[in-house]
Amino acid sequence: MAVLPLLNGIDATARIGCIVGERAVLVGISYARSTRTAPATIDHMANTKIILGERAGGLSPRVEAIAQVLRGARIDAEAHAAPEIPLWEKLVAHGAFGGMAALTRLPLGPMLACQETRAMLLEVMLEIVAVGGARGVAIPAESVERIAAMADGLPPGARPSLLEDLVEGRRLELESTTGTILQMGAEFGVPTPMNAAIYAALKPYAEGAPSLP
Image (cartoon, rainbow, N blue to C red; front, side, top):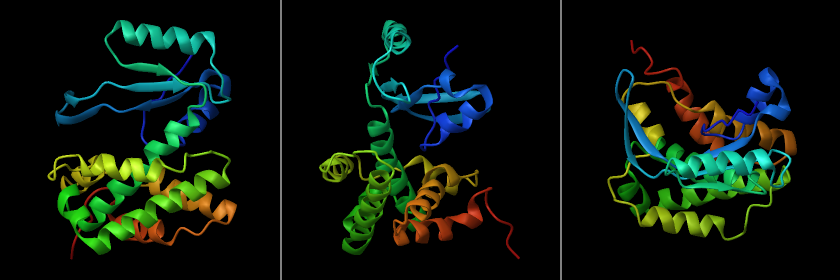
């Protein structure tokens, strides 16, 4: 049996492993862009890339076989020998840009155009990289610059999923992203004040829009 989670955050493999057994669960990273437009209706807008690998690293026959099946379905699948690196790189992007967009209630264009907000975004990203490094994940030094350049190339009206969920009053993926960063930062003694600010501001909305007096 093999379970391939394609969820945001970095704790899905460990959490599922507690239920079905650690050896059964792979590391999976999805870059598909989609949204729920109605009950049981998903609108796939862009991208099909999936990266997968073993939690312990290295390439295995089952990872190669699953990647081949996905490619046969016209999905851009990559078997990765060190999947923790792209998993954390996605967290750097998703956690920082999603958190800052939700915090400011702004799409990427105006959020990045503000010098002070952009500077805070950089600090959020660097904190996540520092936590990953303390955990033993060798996130490439150029990752932050590359991710920032990628965001600059997106449409100014692009809205991360965390902002869309906030605007629509849905539950937020807060604990699996920013919440996990705070927990690991505390565990490894890495300061995460910018991520803590995002977490504190969004926590009242974690279960959906709060009731107002």
